[in-house]
Image (cartoon, rainbow, N blue to C red; front, side, top):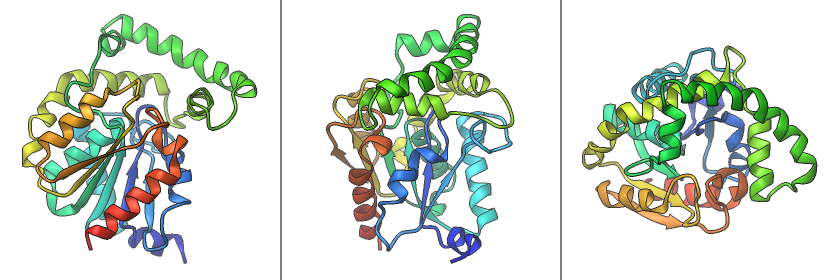
Length: 257
């Protein structure tokens, strides 16, 4: 099957978190049932996407344009972490383009912490982002030799070691999105009751990045949502437990037919 045909028949579109790139979903797409065809995308500001990072709305409108470009009328949107906010915004702006939502360890109501606020601060946030993204990928590559794959530490290090943006600095993408969450995330979560497409929420109760209370709030506020808790994966469920995530996406997508 050609790439063009595969993309145009995609029925699941996968959105990575912050930071990250489309490879975060590789192990999930390899395990999806044969009835599904998936398209994993680099969001603006990450991977091979030439566009700069922007707001949640910028991401959602970019996504809808990308679906048009690929000839995809509607699809299940699966978003991890920050990618969940992008999926929710797309469903708000164009519900007819979204057959269903899979929100994996997604940001949402009550997810922001004092640490997030520091990372978004006018001066401290810039200094932290510059320092972190100058040092962390190098440290992560060194640390991979001592952290087995599949462990929480190994997964986090692999993500940091591979994160990149070929068209600009990752620290700027990270900082832009961090500040954006404080500016407009509440505006999108206030509209959750308007999103009436089916939604599946996947989360680990032990997630240290997005509290489990956020996942429960998403389930309570989205009219057509259910929650499925998966233990043992932490925040990075697509990388740590790809088989479990793929099986649940497959069952959910099949239930929409």
